Image 1 (cartoon, rainbow, N blue to C red):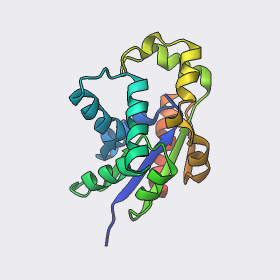
Image 2: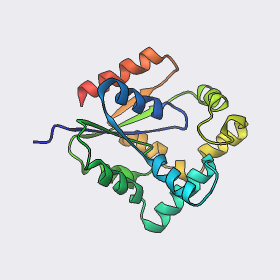
Image 3: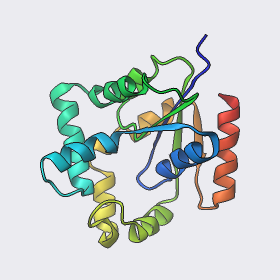
Length: 183
């Protein structure tokens, strides 16, 4: 019998998806499979800058050319080699990706949101993606309206659990722990 827990994380830009995944890794020994790792490898191979637009454009290109679930299938395939009891998939952007993950037993989707002001404040402090720290509010809103982000409302409605991350780290960790206990 499969006792593994498969957790997908989706949500708005800078709502706390990576923070949630890292919490599961550090606190519960989860293994984290992230869409952006696949995209980083491709962008590096092509010698392209690691910018949000490049991540978004590369992801959308691959989904358009090879199917909306191509990246999800790659992560599912990679996860089959894991010995971890908790597997976390971060950065789900399309309903078809969600459908690929739902084929895994015990899979649940967590959708994370946060107020726009807080997410924009985070973009100003962040250095993960080149150039993002200098982003204007207009550029931030443009990134949120990129085709790669267009299915967020659908994913939110399909989520098994919804968490609003208001910036209080202890509250956020408690919410994530409560969700994990329900899975």
